[in-house]
Image 1 (cartoon, rainbow, N blue to C red):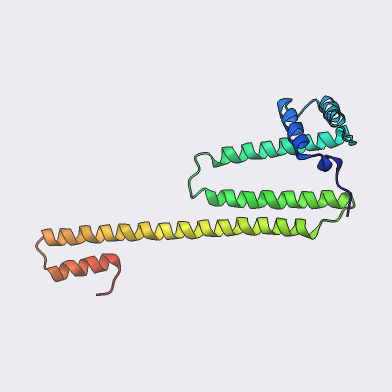
Image 2 (spheres, rainbow, N blue to C red):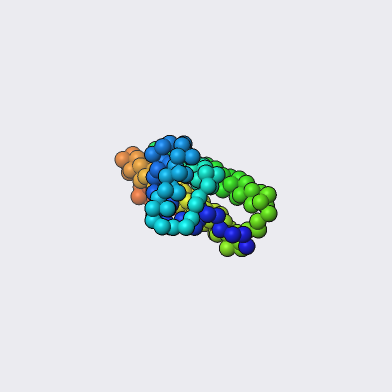
Length: 184
């Protein structure tokens, strides 16, 4: 198993502080932010020094996450239920692409993925597919409910027209049954 990255060894409070500092600077000024971080660590008496490449990589991950959240916000704004299917397909594509890139990146570094990481990726994909299936089932049930309500309304309108025309109750029921698609 590879050694943990130095940035992962940071206490949570420093990682949060680093993230805020990077966001405040627009994910730029990596050298200055790295110096600031190392000053904070030294000030707290921690024997840990973080390099600018680690801070730069951390900054890129944060920026990519921010951009992904913004893109998702834009896509989800005013989205109707029908459009969610396209969103699920796009998310599956994005996750699959990111997973492939991550696996290739890890392989280039000569590191092996932990079974736990692969299991988490599989679980995430399964949950997304299950969510998509539930959404499709909901849409199908909703369409069926709307169609049934429209048929019932049409049957009532047909029966009322027959009644108003002076047709028999038997003929009125037959018209209603024909509209509903029920054998009489």
